[in-house]
Amino acid sequence: MIDLSTYRKRRERFYAQFEGGAAIIPAASLVTHHADCEHRFRQDSDFWYLTGFDEPDAVALLLPFRPEGERFVLFVQPEDPSLEIWHGSRFGIEGAVREFGADVAHPIEEFSGRIGNYLEGCESIAFRVGRHPKYEDIVLGAWAAQLDLSARRGGAASSLVAPCPLLHQLRLRKEPEELERMRLAARISAEAHELAREAIRPGMNERDVQALIEKHFLEQGARGPAYGSIVAAGENACILHYTANNAPLNAGDLLLIDAGCSLEDYYNADITRTFPVDGSFSSEQRVLYEIVFAAQKAAISSVYPGNNADGVHQAALRVLVEGLLGLGLLVGDIDEVIERGLYRHLYMHRTGHWLGLDVHDVGAYRLGEQPKNLEPGMVLTVEPGLYISDRLPIPEGQPEIDDCWKGIGIRIEDDVLVTEKGAEVFTNAAVSSLEQIEKK
Image (cartoon, rainbow, N blue to C red; front, side, top):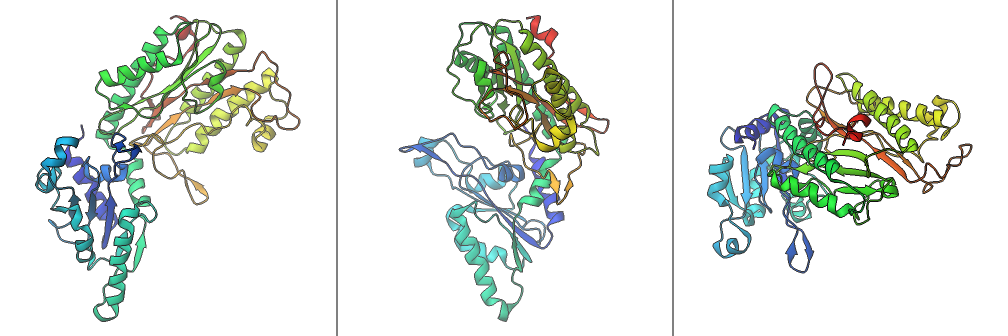
């Protein structure tokens, strides 16, 4: 687990970039899924990033304009044995200071009565409007009261801003401690994919494979799956977010598995592999797999400082389109096909996304009209694919799809760190070459 000093350093970096302001960052609340039963609690990632505090219904105040010893205030649920016997122990007021380094802590019930005093003297207020209805009226009311008094007292906060851009910029470049956690999540997830590859055979059900993978996550101390595991056999692989996972595995089909674990401190992996159920690719499956594999290699080679996420996507896209043109699944000039999006019935998603505390992690891909350059410490997925089906209309001028291709869905996804020298692939332990797969 990440040391508490890391959270302190994050807050200090935030203070340095938000001097004069006051930030209000609420925790997540429990979510009910039926009657009076709640889903397992999952902390808000921004709140977690700054505090490491893993209880619901809390609020962090970050007050850079105040002196040392008054900058980090936590409002938390107090200890309550009558409730803790049902839901587990709480750190309470004293624990928030002792265990999490808060300068001051209060019961959450006192938030509305104290927030006005804490905001006095700040130049601006950072609070995400529209995300936290439980606290929004309280925060806006406190600011309104400041403004009403400003004619006599002066000093009211001049603006209400979202903390997200600043926080998400900090989260985009991972610290060494974060990278170690992500390497662990990647290792556990890659092991699970290898267990699945070795185990799959005709006659199994997609759910059997899901159970095997998620069992390994739990056995290795992970929190569980980072997202709904996708175990898609045959034409189910052409449904990008397929999660029914209840169909049989048939000889001759491919099995696409998109699954990664989340650690107890919320760092994630995200891996996709595609295997033949009976151990051998058909000729059509093989040639499409070779195209996707080559596209991924080209995309990973383009992960280096100074490039950008769109450049990574374009590197993969060009290989995919060139391969499809060679097979006659697309026709025309490669540049025109790409520019007009005439490939999108066969490849309809981007080649990757940021990865971290969230599977689709925060951080801008563009700054206005300019793409955000890749920098050392950023982590992204690289996941080209092809999905040959007749679900989407074929663009005018493009050929009809022969039945021999239909129902083939392939995606290969790895987690990749941008380094000073290029790319480090966290998930290489899950094999992906044709030779390795068919060696099973």
